[in-house]
Image (cartoon, rainbow, N blue to C red; front, side, top):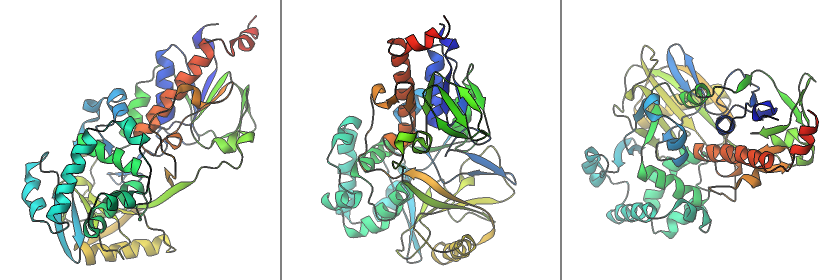
Length: 426
């Protein structure tokens, strides 16, 4: 039986599913991707609204991610670079701090900033050096404590923790108290130190679109919901059954496989609001952080400080809220507008759109960097992929998709399940 004759299905067209398809294609297989929505991307998508590029949540691509370097064409994505720092708003004033070793314009603002003491700034330099020399494998084998405990253990002052680390990393971890594992902190910090935060000129959604365009023999079935995955067939929500030899499930496996019940993945959520403004109060491509503890806003960014493929008539402002709130979406919009004015002196022209992202990041405890292909196999013909298996990052999504595809290939080509499949054609 030829490789292209095997019926291989991938449930979900997110990053892990697209990478799995890419790995399978490279080996000569022709998978089929079943996606419940109308397009690829999963949690990584961009809408065009009145000419503005609206990413589903404020997301960046760290160009030091090893798997992003391997699988993406950065030049074709036309990556736009953020300044390596942040402008912090606190008590009605703003200060900018960053890495002057990578951008000299940040030297004097960072030295003069009162966000942290000289001792704090020296500790940051020491941490930069330590993590630069620490391997990714060593990071994920380290003792895991909360990020807050980690920073205190390193001797950072409460001032710099509350005014910089909390607002900056809360926007990355999507939780306000730095309860996320120190492994994830070290990983992200190392990636920031070795590269830059970037955005494709066409928005974050350009990443899955590029991956899809690189696939030449993969079939896509959109707007199709999967109800259950069995060993030999996939049952769709419309009760139709599709014969399959192998299946890779990239999300929601507990709902699709009967013996995985009660293993539902927990998720972190956030609100991402977009506004139109007449001018930028932060002109450079740098993230804005609101450090006042009572503020609902965590971070904001003026998207037109970077070059974009599609551009509206005015300035585009993105605001992220990670704190849990009982406010309605309309009340959140009103409070955010008021806080922008009070804390940041930003007057919005109008509210464009709000995304309430219920499944923004997987809530994980024992974070890992990598997994062996055999670990992705949960049944003889069923494999799992997704960043929730490792850590909440695009890099992890790519690793898991690659591992699931390699696990499937190993199972098939080592002859563990080929006999039953081959008998169908005898």
